[in-house]
Structure formats: C-alpha cells, structure tokens
Image (tube, rainbow, N blue to C red; front, side):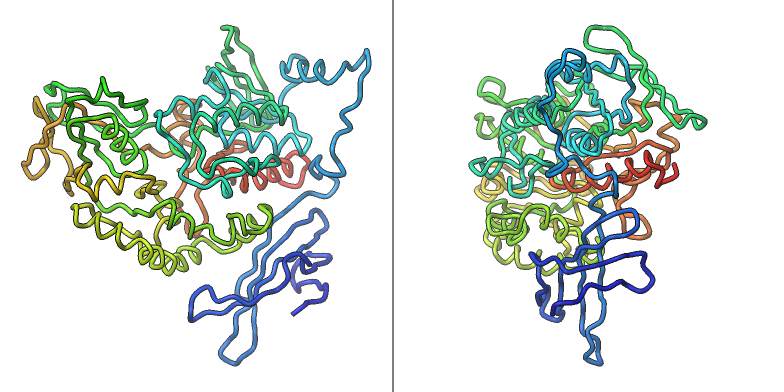
Length: 529
C-alpha cells in the first residue's frame, strides 16, 4: 500500500504524504486484531506535523480508518533553530561581545524579562527550557538546589534509573552509545549539569520564589525571587511553568502513639543510605512496596541489618527490569528500534485507553516470562497485583504514579526470605515502644520505620510554592479525565499561562515539545490565553 498525497475531507490539511522511512506495514497487536499502519507527514496553513494511521478490516472485508494520530512538529515561520536553521555562532564584535560575553549578559536578565519562568531544573525543566529556547523564546529556570542535578544526587546512594537509557534520552542531546543501560543517580545528575551548560540554559540556583501574582490585564506574572546571594529580584514572565516533579509533597502519615516509639521514623524521601554502622543490629520496617520501598529494603539488607521487613497493604505489580522491562520497550526503544523521534510518534499514537487494553496481553506475556520470580514472591507472602483489568505497568504509572516495582534485585531477596513481607490490608493501628501495632493486633518489632508512602498530587507543590489563589484555580494533576487524556499535565492547567511539566525522562522529552509549541502558539497569537 502506498497512498498518494491527498487531503482528508473535513480537515484543513493542505497536503499529506506517507513518510518513506516508515512505510506501511501489517501488524497483529493481538491475535484477534490486524492493522495496516503507517506514519505520514502533513501540513496545514499554520503548521507542519507527523502522524500515524491504522486501518482495520470491517466485517464486509473493507479496510477502514480505525485510529488516526497527529502531532504538531512545528509552527510555520516559527520553526525550531535546529539543523539548517541553527545559529551561526561565529559573531564577535566590540559592541555585541563574543559568545561568552553574550551568555553572561543573557543569563542575568538585567535588561530584559524572560518570556517563560520555569520552576525546577530536573528533567522536566531542562527539556522544556531547551525546547522553548529552540523556538526563540527567552527562558529562565530557577531551582533551590546548589547545583543542577542535585535533585538526583541528593537521593539515596543506591538509586539508579529503572528505565533503560534507550528510552530515556533528552531533547536534542541523546546519551552516548557507551552509556550504561541503567544510569546511577550521581551520573545522571552530572549529565543534567552538562546538559544545562551545553544547551546554554539560563539557570539560577539556590533561588526560590517569595511571592507571585498574575495580571489578567497585562497577561503576565509578577514573581519575586530570592537569589543565592540573598538579593531579591522581581520578574515579569508571560508564562510560569511548575516543573518540580510530577508528584507533589511527600505523603507522611501520622499514627496513634507515634511519640512513644523508641526508634526512629522517617519518610522514604529522606533516606540517603544505610551503612553498616547505622544498620548493624537494627530491625527495619519499610512501610510501602513501590520502587523506593523495595530499594530502601534492599539497601538496609546489604548494609547488614538484623532484619528487614516490608509492610504491604495491597497488591503491587512487579516486573523484572532485565526481562519484563526489556519486553516493554523491545523493537521501539532498544538497540534495534527506529530513531527516537520516530519511536516517540509511534509510542504516543494510541489513545491511552487503547494502550491500557492492549497492555493486558503484554502483561500476560511478561508474567509468563517471569513466572518463577512471581511464584517465589507469592510463596513468600508477597501480594502481586497486575493492575486494573490486568493492564500492568503503564496504566499504574499513568493513573496512580505508583503501585509497582521494577525489580533490580529486591525480589530475589524476598523470594529467599532475606527480606520478609508482612501483609496488613487495614494498615497500622499505632506504635508501641519497640514496634508497630497492626490493625489486626499483630505487633512487628522495629528499631527503624521507613515510610515509603509516596507523594501527594503535584497540586500540593503548587500550593506550597505559589500559594492558595493559584492552587485553587488549577486542576489536579495526573490520572485520566473524561476523554481519556491525562489531567492538566503538558496542557492548559486551569489558570491562564500557568503550566505543569513533569514525568519520567522519556515523557519529558516527548511532551516538552508539545508544551513548548502550545506556549509558542500563545506568544505568536495562534492560541488565545
């Protein structure tokens, strides 16, 4: 099949053509369904883009449109400064200065205002800033950390990414081909720092917001910030973006008689490392069985704790990074896959509800490949949950942001009985001097209790940083709306010219482009906001 360039009836497309690099193919995503699929390019009066189409055979034998996905690549006359449109770089003059002198001036914003102010210099803020600057918008990132990348460096010592490097590239600057498959947290922090420098991003560190307000009349923000040297500065950006992570503030529950406990209690976000001196002779109870709960339990076991126990309230989805993790990305984000830009279009071309439905078959295949590990977990008393309708990891992540563990070693410890599991569906009733009393009356002895209880909605960070007037105007973040789309993230938030940006490295790479184009559209008058 090689469709000729044509215009779709009812669209404003001026031309469409099949991308010759991504020719039509026939696939069977599940045994009972066959598609003819193809990537294509399109052009409208205002933009250029790419899309993905799927045809399915109807009962009468005729192939009909089943799904159509379109993604804007660029706005006409406002394209990214990449490739043939890249900057010259060789200008030097006594009036304008050389490159270094121009960078110093741009970074200070002494004589100008940023078009966009981004709060947070993690993967969300860095990817978005790079995209916005490529669209010739001025951008300032502020972050309370001392160095770019400290949001990863400051986390627990044993942390590595749970997503493979082939999936986790950043905008414009992919990881080198000799980069490890899973990135240690300090190495990733160093990459972020290098990325900010190489992408010429303007980052003010040790800087925090002291007040903010929005003017509907001027369609701009007034933001007061306190800088590293203690000085204050007032900024007037057109857009404000919260990029502090797709989760909000740590969820720290309190319990009856907590003050009577003779040991220590802390939230998983405060965990740095379990050392032989801190773990020796100690009984550890980790409350929560997500990624961080497992990692912290493994850390304490390897440090020589007397005992380590995971407290589980409900089932957790588990897949092994080396098996199921590979199966999730096989053929799309691996060494055999297409260029990342093509993989991004393909991976986002299915509506989320369809992805969830198709995920059931993949979840079954992963479970079959990992049945020995899953059986061992169940034998050890660990409750495995395969997600809503058996849809597995992706739905868990996109709707809850948790409830799963990508296994990098702790499951083996559980199967071998080295890390114990205690189930308590009704949770914790309270504390005693030397342990935790469960709702059914059992007592688990502990010297250290780690609350790996997750994080609140990102809206809580909005409230903490920007105050109630803005937080009350915006929507909750994450989970799906009535149309099956993600709430508030990467799209209008509910407040004019305020945006949320977050997600894992891959989603930040993908959706930073779409958010940057939305903001650029506002700035050039294509979107009214």
